[in-house]
Image 1 (cartoon, rainbow, N blue to C red):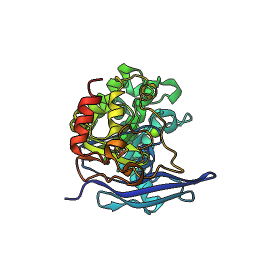
Image 2: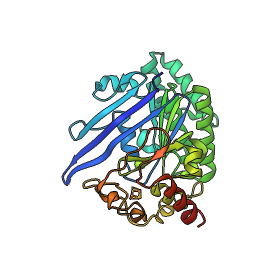
Image 3: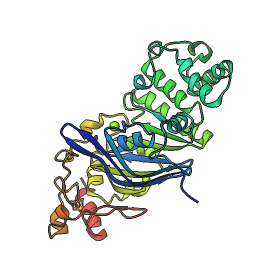
Image 4: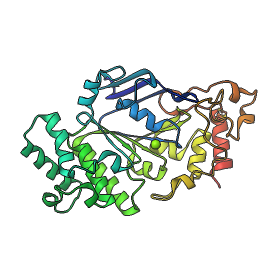
Length: 336
Ligand code: SF4
Ligand code: MG
């Protein structure tokens, strides 16, 4: 059967004053119901842009999108704004890093959970209000009947995050996109919210795309993993496969700097020498070649000229042979 979410050969380009930004450059992946796909990569790797594209949240005047995004049999690229509006919050929902980007300060938390539910389900105000109370209880807000009438500023940061999750899940979305949903929270609250997301996935059977730079979080949350670099997928596999035997030198770099849950991830990622490439003018060949330590092992200057393909299923977009990957990773990288 067809996958629940299928992204094929996705290209996303933004026109800016400085030129065209190649934010996503030929990305494909699938996701089934009840499964979680982790997407990792540094800032600017295209992981957030990809998911904003799935949700249809780009300005069509400044964005060129090509490829296919099929959700439950429906093509989303080129879909009418009305169609996307109906899908957002109903069939697909997003949890952002910062709840203040999703919650308005001017309306009560309860109203912000209830209104989309009322709109999508056509239920009465009273029913929608009860749903808001129910969802606040589900995400562990104490005294939900009372707190449903609070404004966001009356909630703590962790409670706002929970309220945003309640809002995202109120309509039982089939697809939930979580973009760094816990990065701003302290470790205890972070762990609680991750548990909560897993419980809610069990209950609703949602497919989840979980975006983070934090491999510690991904190892507890995801079934499958996609590593992105410069708008491309450079490695994919099950979480166990990728974390135990990573094949791409960029993933080796991420793993050797693997942060603990809740640590300062931006600082933890600095051990990969060099900086992320410019997407205005991406490197030729393998986009990682200016930062990679292994182009000589490949030889022939291929890394700078020939773009390595990512195989279907488990694999990495790298010219190193499987044997070279094993020797380099096991002999040189892992012991450190
Ligand atoms: Fe490094 Fe070459 Fe592999 Fe790219 S293709 S990751 S430059 S070895
Ligand atoms: Mg981001």
